[in-house]
Length: 91
Image 1 (cartoon, rainbow, N blue to C red):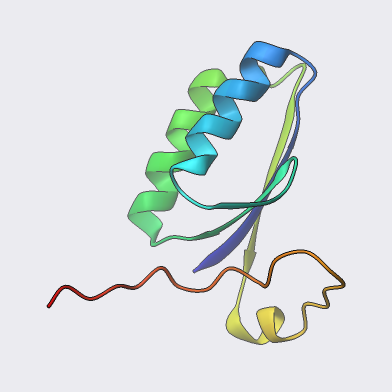
Image 2: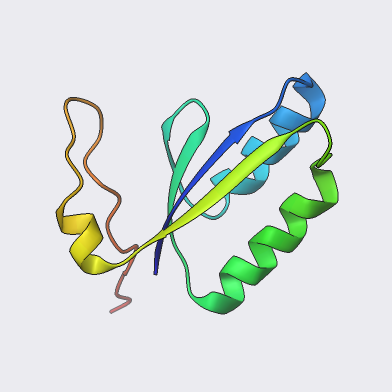
């Protein structure tokens, strides 16, 4: 499933920790926005790691799931293309 994950974190240390975690699971498309293709197990794992760092009373993190038909309706001007599956083959 495709997810758009955004955050607003004022503390530099927590913000850096969050971005480092997200970089292991997806592609940064803007400073505080990542696109991720994850199965439910990876999403659960990611959210658990993020919840260990986030301070819910000070920070904001949003995770939006997008179905294939929703992805087809994403409009983009500039920047990188929509993140595609990170499938690869070993021969």
